[in-house]
Image 1 (cartoon, rainbow, N blue to C red):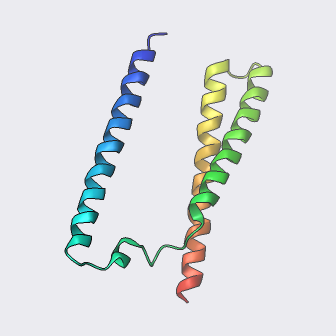
Image 2 (cartoon, rainbow, N blue to C red):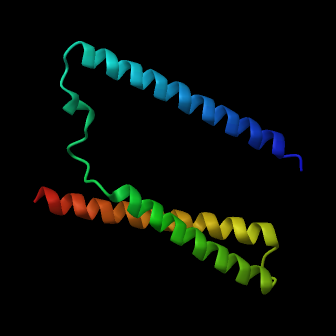
Length: 113
């Protein structure tokens, strides 16, 4: 497959970028702590906790529904195999993330009142 070198390069770049970013962030935090800054500034008080698990769960549910519908579309020969699976996984995964966003927004609005 001719896309493999592109994917391998993207994975290596993404991993390297993440490691470098985390090392820089960590060193900045240590420098602030050495200067006597309170560690509570690293916490986000406005963001309710627990929504990352909800979004990941909804994403997996959406991907599973996408796989199921992609299989149905492929078996009914409405779409070829690759477009059926990829389009449905991304469609339902995206819908699940949008639902998670609106649930989080609703919870934030209720906590502000």
